[in-house]
Length: 325
Image 1 (cartoon, rainbow, N blue to C red):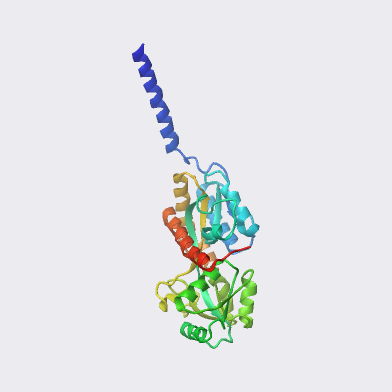
Image 2 (image 1 turned 120 degrees about the horizontal axis):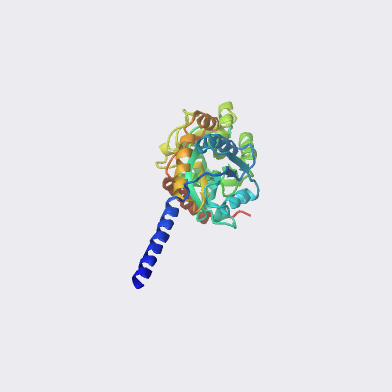
């Protein structure tokens, strides 16, 4: 009797652990079993929206499911990002976001944790910033600009696309690297800021290459340097800031995230397919129009990049006591 009870218990436990192992092994094995949504926490028509739609076209074919782009603008991206944070961690709801995600908790009070609540899946693209000046500025090179700034500390001002944006972070990195002091003039977005640089109301700005390109080529602003490690194909005659100040690098990025807890098999599959997507002629052509570069990497490599930028820009936020109302 006792032997039979022991035997029955052993069989039951073996079956239980077998089922658990099978369930674990099959986690995410049926992905995707319904349409996938890529949430873009910004209005339709922007760079992120266009990139999401280009990626979605490839993913839809590869995953054999519709991939929908859902623009959830509002509250500086908090609404759309928060929606993904609360979604089921199964790979069917994704977030396309940029480097702002890495530092948003240092600038805003959020209903989610931008680091703990999201699983990095894959980088998609990066963009350099361009150091531009007003056409009336006497400085034609970075050394000349630095000399002019040092000759009159605080006499030159720089525009940014807003407090706590990559535009401000890059300019503050430039100030630290060059030992200069430039007065910060924050704007709400790039259009008004670059217009005031063109008009000479503000002397200097660091802005993403896609926005700067048309103004540089038309001669409305002067491009002195780019913040990427290498020169840009779109601006081959413009040197890198790292050629003057070694290791200077400040690039913006866009990547794909899922809610934390997404099965690793799903993360790996999405990472592989996004890596293929950014190499397609259609996506590369779109990136070229925005002066952006395709970026690939493993989930862990992407996660390391997110954390690195969080530390780098977080130090600037703390040092300057940056607060966004």
